[in-house]
Structure formats: C-alpha cells, structure tokens
Amino acid sequence: MNAAEHSSNLGKLVHNFQSLETWLRVVLLKLESAQRPTSRLDFESMTIGTMISVDALTDYSDLATLCRRFNRHMEAKDAQILNVSLVDIRDAIAHGRILGTPNGFPLRLVKFSKPTSGQVKLVVNEIMDHNWFSLQLLRTHRAIELVRAEAEHIALAMPAPRATQTLSPTSKSIKDVP
Image (cartoon, rainbow, N blue to C red; front, side, top):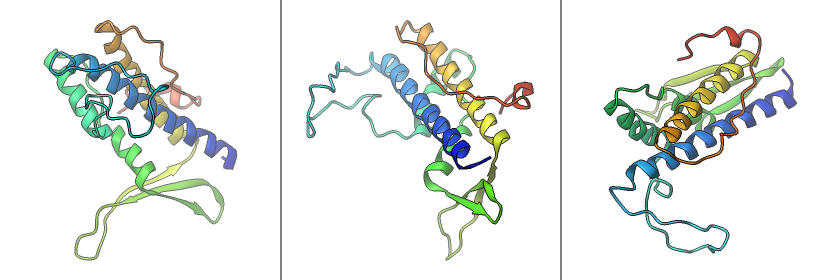
C-alpha cells in the first residue's frame, strides 16, 4: 500500500461512516416524527445563525447513540440490528493516532483510553492494510444497506446510498462480518 491508496481507502471509509450517520438520522427522523414535530429544512436559503428545531436530523447525538436508537426500533420488531462495534473504528479514526512505521506503509491506527492516575490504556491497535480497509468498507457498507432497507420498509422515498465498497479477493470470502 502506498500513500495514494491509503488516502483513497481512508476517504472511502470516512464517506461510508458519514453516509451511515445520515441514513440513521433520516430513518430516525421518520420513526420519531410521530413523537415530536419536524420541520422541512431548506439549507440553501438558511444563513448561519438560523435557529432550527431539534429532531433526529439536527440533534447532537453521536454515532453510538444513533445506532442504539435504531437498534431499539429493530429489536422491537425482532429484526437484525446494527453491530455497534463499528463505532469503535469510527471513533479510532476520529480520535486516535495514525502512525507510520520505519518501512512506511501500511500505517498503524492506535487509540488510547482517557487517562486514569496518569496512565492510559491502549484500546485500538490496527494495521491499516488492504485487508483491514476491505473488511471495514464491507462492514460499513452492510450497515448502510441494513438502514437503507429499513428506510424502504417505512416507505422513505430515498435514492440508493452511495456507499463506497472496495473488496479484495480475500474479503469477498467473508461470510459473517462482525
């Protein structure tokens, strides 16, 4: 893997996480709209400082909270739920460190816990090689598809997501991605 491949794969993965969060928010907006009113937003005409009602699209929930809210809905109907461990990878990318090695690529993703008594625990330590990216892209793609299928089920007229999935020959054989 070289710098261009790493950057491309990382961009695809970040795109998938952003797509997943948007799909979750849109589905939750529809599911929760009976509980509280939602407004139609025209962001093209809004200016900075415009006040907007809080709903699933605009609230400050993080990805983990959105996944839990979606999973509660899915569990209530005894349906497949999202694997919330995806959030750990997203958080590691957002809050961890990407370190080089003496050999250059592939790079290593590490994340540490919050400090306790002047020490931190290593909580993520992953080599970001082709197989790792392929697995994470597959996992995020499957999560997006699960949420999109629920969007179709609740009759949201939405275009197909533009999730980015690049699979290597080895990742195509993965039958049950965690």
